[in-house]
Amino acid sequence: MWSKSKHLVTKLPVSVKLTFIYAVILFCILLLTSLLTIGGVKFFLDTQVQKDLDASQYNVIQYLATGNPVDQQLLTQDLLSAGVLLRVFDENGRLLLDSAPYLRNSKHEQSSHQNKPPDKKRDFHKFHTEDDVYGEKLVWTGDHSYTFQFIRPLSAEYHFLRILAASLTGTSLLGLAIAIAAGLYISRKILRPVRDMTEAAKQIEVDNLEKRLIVSQAGDELSELATTFNHMLNRIQTAFEQQRRFVSDASHELRTPITVIRGYADMLDRWGKQDEATLTEGISAIKSETVSMQTLLEKLLFLARTDQGKQLLNKKPLAMEQLIDEVVRETRLIAPEHQVELATNEPVTIEADGALIKQMLRIFLENSVKYTPAGGTICVASEHQGAQLAITVQDNGIGIPSEEQTKIFDRFYRIDKSRTKTTGGTGLGLSIASWIAEQHNSSIRVVSTVGQGTLITVLLPLE
Image (tube, rainbow, N blue to C red):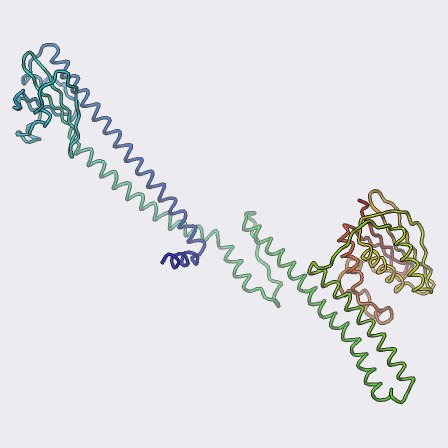
């Protein structure tokens, strides 16, 4: 039963839950306030009754101490406080005086304490009954003893307390009902932006990522939530578009070599068995396309590992002078038609993954070779710049338009689609280089002018 009730409570709207919580808190506050009010009033009334009885008893004792007799004159001296009644019994228990015989039974019995032997030292004792409070005092006058009984009826006070309790209960219930109604209205109004967000989120699908939440100008937490939600949608939309473009471009890049391989395989199947030249051409083309496809797959697998956080880094002290010299010598062997120069190459040791740093430099040099005409110059330099090592790769190739320079590190991005056929490449190299630089807390700067060349600078921290 409890689990079912708990399940039902968890399914209630937030506005109802908030209203319920505040209603319970308000009910506890009202209940505590009512109890304290009634308790305080009762304590005040009880204290006042005690004071009235003590004052009446004191006045009567002082009256008798002056030698006045116990007779009817005692009731006419205005010795009793308001609301206090007086009865006097003799030593035999007979009622001698009664200040209000019409309010009580004239045969009112004396207290059971009166049956005890008289005690001259007896104090003023008070007793509570269901309807009143009374006190008894044993007084000796000459050889006679009298029992003075001071009575304070409480029916009026109890009636007032009942009315007060009923009034507090009624006002508390009314206040609770108003609080619940107002709480439901206010909480629903306050949480309306959340419902709007929910409805907007339901309408957002893969094919409808452009929808955004309306951000109010209130500047409160809900406005901040809506702004954050819109930013999240922007990132999701960007990532989704990149992923979609990535899949499309990857499919295109893989489709091209597969189509070429299949075409040459069909050609070999038809004529290659008898024509040695055709056989040689086909095998050479298939091998070339296979190498291109293998390179593409390796880059795709590298990026997949980086996306999943599985690409391991093996950082250790790395002598950059030796590594840069090695990369330059390899580039000279690969691109003999270009002039690859090594300018400044300062001896520096950094903490880095040597294989990845070498791969990054190769990517920059390969791009310079691709987009620099034969006979062009590629210059590599390495020097200190404050607390960083600046490695530059500069060419005098075709350059990059200014509006394209911020996009060259996107996956599969190419500046000129028509150049791909002659320059080759998959558009993944600079994405890999950017990731490697990021993992080494480095930055890449690109300065390029169309028709004049490109300068790429990598800033590696020395510490």
